[in-house]
Length: 197
Image (cartoon, rainbow, N blue to C red):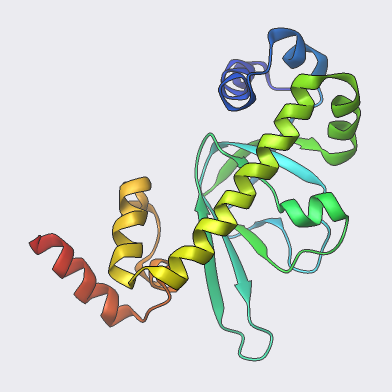
């Protein structure tokens, strides 16, 4: 693992899953640096996801392409110091229906699924990491589904900029419109309404 990034990863592993120093040492050099250029992919649609990444630098979008219309639907934006994967694909070893694209040049520390499985068997701390990662992605999916069912586009917009305040400076309005499930002119109207409040 790249030594300069090790303290950052260790801090976030301890915050995320209360891993001990011994747990972190157990992983040794299992994490390694992966760079992904802007508009390149962490994983492709209909491929099996084999890694968990920790984002050191950059921003990703998770999206789906409708095979009938070729229309893209943004599901999430994931930024620095978060763990990135396609969880269902990772756990079931089946192909992923989503694409995970870097919207900026990105650097991640990644660990392979097979190595994670070994760590789970060796340490309750790493088992806890796996459980919390799964819980987090379950909550992402549940919250996203509920927001589409129960919130207006304006409420989804406010929620997004509250939770990720720098997102408007980093993501195109077209991608944000797709995330909100609306067209561009509607986003302009929503932004104006929110600015007036």
